[in-house]
Image (cartoon, rainbow, N blue to C red):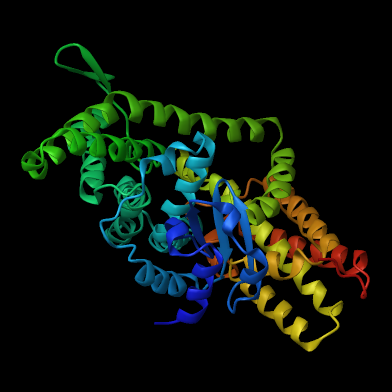
Length: 452
């Protein structure tokens, strides 16, 4: 198995296998739900080959690996037998607050499905740009076929989210997908399209609001959370001889109705509220919005809270067909890259210079954890420079209304997705982000200054 020695050392220094309730990963980090956080040996973890940093956030231990995290997790999953039927004890979730639980879930849910939504988003963004430039028409059969390829993931996003959330909550994946299918059944989508009714009446009494759940994430996440509790409760109260047939039957019936009548509608309103808050901020001043989002982004990545922006961006795509947050995330990554690159001229050893070059290249490719944990946490003034550069560039692009039409990774290779009327401003924003953060970091950080 790849990286087996490193993984065994990680397991040992997080308190051993017996201290691990669950584990998953996002784009760059292994994430552990531990029974006792005091058993973690942070000093030894930092010495393990492949580990770039650690963070204990929202009742979870985050071990920063970088772009090879999927390989590390494959080995970890094998050693911990994570694909077994062993379930996380109910108290694992009960001890967490709602915000903490939501952050854990968002980070765990989107890690595995990012390749699908990023790939589809890249295609969608490119197609939107080519249409804007009148290179292609959005009425041709070719465009319609490619649009199906690009839009399918976003239309049926609740299915992907359901499967991933079921893994996080340790409940039946296929029942979770069945809940998503219930929420997007043609009866519901046709009623939304027709616009003739606002609700169905269940049993002639209970209102089932008509909503378009395509592209949404919050309703299905909390529906699967409810399923995890209902399934365990039903399985516990039923006689063993009845469980195989009636546990899934009763669970699907109860949670399906709960999702359609309560959880789904509340989730829709919550998602709209989040997206509305961002829109409100932009309505006050796009420049102010850019300054705030740009300033928050680097520290959010450092603490692992950056995943909170993902549901908002996806809600924007679902509501209005575009998003202005993701371009700011792009600017933040470029600013982090610029500040990191400046430290090459401040480093004193070849080894440190090599780490900086690797981290800067990784930042250009959209993975900024190596830069943040491996470089900028050592040079605090450079981190400040990255934050300032992120704010400047985000405010600049916000002032010109730069937006994206599909979820993509914030990588330099994502730039073609901005082709269209905002392309030049996106390019200028990248230049501003890298140049300003590089310049500020270069002049702020003396060659001999390095802090732990």
